[in-house]
Length: 260
Image (cartoon, rainbow, N blue to C red; front, side):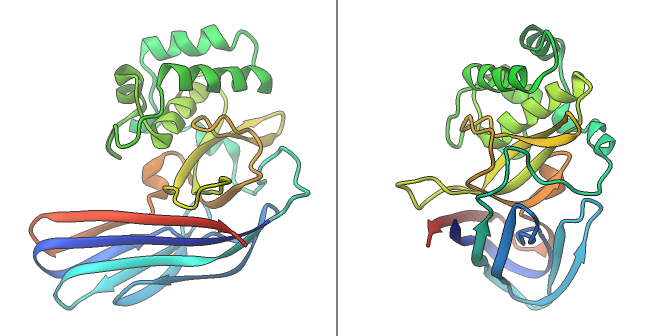
């Protein structure tokens, strides 16, 4: 399946920005799961490419002239491999790296009890049941949380989005001693072309990584484009940056994922 992606992020400011640096992780890589036929990122300023500790492609864009609005656009074509099994990507990164705690993926006592009650024995089937229970406990509600929330925040609020579901599920898996990682990317769904950039979890079990898309209850990455992996959202955030001046920032994004 070939997918066309167009991801636009628009920024505007109440006062001129004197200078800024943007750290951009919006570039999928070719691997056993997907082939990137072409991909481009349009962003003003000087650009430099590198890779982070998780092998994600990382662009640094530096703007040294004043501006009051800016658009970052990523677009390209990716072909998914229909012959892949239900296992997700394999790589050379030590799975134990994804046992490290982060502020966003900690469990409180209620979450620990919740995880233990749904995982009497560790198995992929029981992890699917846990994913379903998480979605029932924390229903998906658009725009209900911010990127600064943690797994504990969303679990206690009992509402969230894909980022929250992924953080909660990762937190519980880590508590159970299972390496679990955060994946950012895109999801193609039939009969709709406007989807936000997506997030899901992968868990290392039976010597392989498996997909757990809690928000959509999908456990095979047959319609998922991988962009970046990390311990939590902050390792894979599409755009992070620092700026000098600019007043108050406003941001909105548009994502299209189309079959072609």
